[in-house]
Image (cartoon, rainbow, N blue to C red; front, side):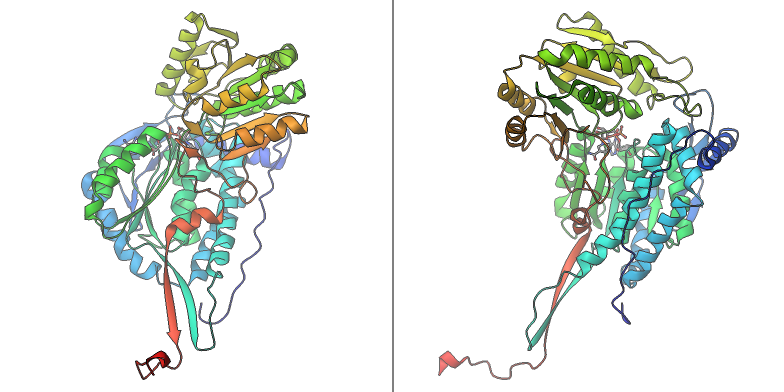
Length: 541
Ligand code: NAD
């Protein structure tokens, strides 16, 4: 900025559209869905502003209609990944030194493109490629991604304005440089918004990025990439490579110029990546930043004073929206025996009213799980629960992969608070419930706190303020996003910064300034106006 202290537009959350029957937005998204379903796309790698078709391809299919082809994507060879490193480093020279208002304008433009001309397309791509119903697509691919882009621009300017004190004799200036090298962004299948945000947030702060989307999200990743291109992200700044994650990661993490990992995905993958980075630590030019938001085993714990209908609704939405495939999804619940009969009636009533099928039919609340691997894993746990003496399935329990990967929303009640599905992240529409004696409130809270390795989200329901106070204290470290009388899902950028600790991640809070601090390396510049000319201090006489 050389000719003004510019202020960016104040960030506001993008309003969620209704998609009610007959609404224009519903017509638009259904039209886009049909057109996209009836055509195919070819997604090449994107390196240095160029499409690279390697010829080594995989087919993309809707999880709810797995025999149908949406097109193909191309897989990288090692030489392509090396090419991405070289071109990113070359692009860095101009990108890192360009005045920030240009970066701000590009990503604000990307937000407006999604809010307007790309909205139906990015939602339809998310419905087709990831089997989200329209509401889940809208809050993710449209609204959350728009919010990330707008709020991060505002956060960037807030960070830049944080400056140290100066005196009349010396001016102290903090320059928020990007990292020296390139950032590697690895994104999960379950949120189009996360897929867009992980490369964009680092690039916004002046970094160059190599982005590897999940194999199961390439279809909507391509729309995100098209938005970035149209918004004016220059060649080489965000490069997209698909293919073997082990080869791609090894190649990138072996580079001496690797300077940051922006990861969201499962805990084991993140731990392995961290280990590889550790093994390479002597080779890097700078200590890499490592940011990883990983798995969860998120809880709802209800007190005897809580309202059974509210608790049941929180489970219905918190456990089953997007088929339970949110890192924040409720998957273990602790319900006092005195209210269980009511909670159960409401919950089972809700589940029986859920409709399941293609997201194109907007009556469907539930669609398919992401892929066959996930389907088979869920089926295995459900079958095991049918056999185990300490588990009982009270709703759901069926599955069918003949057309799509459909798993019925399933409720397991267990007498064993450490039952496998109370501890293991299944990432599907399965919730497990443990019933406790009404008077064992504190004991149960300790159980919640000690079960499993994660600490991502959790919710407590109570009308008793003393009981709540106890819960807030005992569960202090059990969740990075803690909810009182609300479901544990649905964090909004700018309102509930998101992330957890323990095995759930580095808790760098996506959707807040805290995350952006990880992508900068400040330079302190002290300028003295009149330099001393004698080394002797007065005490020397
Ligand atoms: P995943 O770990 O299978 O994949 C995530 C990414 O890592 C993908 O791009 C994948 O291709 C890549 N990957 C897989 N194996 C790899 C390897 N050996 N080396 C390098 N990269 C590799 O996760 P997923 O199934 O896409 O997403 C679900 C997981 O993500 C769940 O555990 C969920 O809790 C977590 N998640 C966490 C958050 C959060 O904010 N904490 C948000 C969304 C998802």
